[in-house]
Amino acid sequence: GGGAGFCLLVDTGVLAGNAPQLLQISNQAWLLECIFDALDTLLVEMRKGWKEAWAAMRAKLALLEKGLRDHAAETSASDELLTCVASGFASPPLQAFLTGIGENGIRRWEKAMDSGSQQVQQQASLKMLPLIQSLLFRAGELQGLARWEERFEAAGLGEAELEALTRHATLLMHRVMEVGAAAQAFQRGISQMCHWLERLAGRLINETGSTAISPDDALAVARFVKTHLVEDRIAALLHSPLPGGGMEAVRDEEQSASQKLADALRPPDEWWNAPPMEKNRVPLQEQLQRTRLAAETALGGTLAGVSARLSLEASIQLYPPPGNAPGKGDDASLPRVVVAAASDGPASEFLVASNHAWTG
Image 1 (cartoon, rainbow, N blue to C red):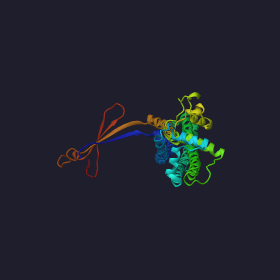
Image 2 (image 1 turned 90 degrees about the vertical axis):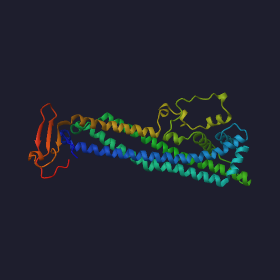
Image 3 (image 1 turned 135 degrees about the vertical axis):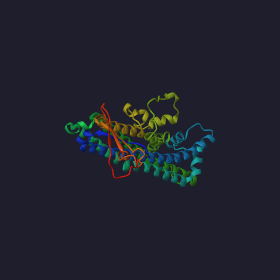
């Protein structure tokens, strides 16, 4: 075409004088970006897998809740299970539920939930934790470089910003460990509950076997029902706002028998009984976003510092020969360059001799 070409001459002394330092920082920045992208992908996969597992859990409990409504019962599925494990008596709706799904149905239920919780554990401990440990290593190395002022002061690394990145990465590791621990507790609890329900269903269907449960097992099942069946604790740890900050305690006279039983069996790490610091913790998804933002802020100082020290020396504008037609003289057939200095001053025009045809 017949358009003009442009080129800028930039003073890159800051790049040449700090090339090794900037290369080292850019390598770490690229690795951090790869780590965050991998963590985002794993979190999406983890949320999707657990959502499917929890849907299977709710589908089973919905059958029990439907039976309770059919019998005009005002209790929830979790209250019904708590009452049964505490008293050893299965109500007609619970009996109908257990005989309807049978022992094989309970085993399939346990297997599906076991697979879902195990997948969350593996993604947390085998995939996410190593990435976060690498993230902490990179952040610690950059923090050490920031303290080496003699060599890295011109690179713009901020020690305070990198300390914030290390702190957020540490909190992120704690969130991932909590998710893995919650999935492990869920896997253990669903196994205990299903084994108890399986024995209960076998007694109801075959009228053989014992439904007796030890006090320790009864306590474990009751805690699991109250902790994991009332609310999706793993989803809360992954991405949902954690309950507990504004909850008010129910007065004793307003509590049902099952609620009083649940209060007696409630584990010490329940959200609404947690210390204030634990109540203010954020889910994994938000902590990951905060850690990424902290990394961008910490590395943004280098980008801003280098950008501020880059200066424009001149701009070059290359024009094609006017018409590029023969018979207008030798000078008319040559392209021209106009060089404008960055400071105020006249522009200079030059002729460019070339053995190649002008291509625009």
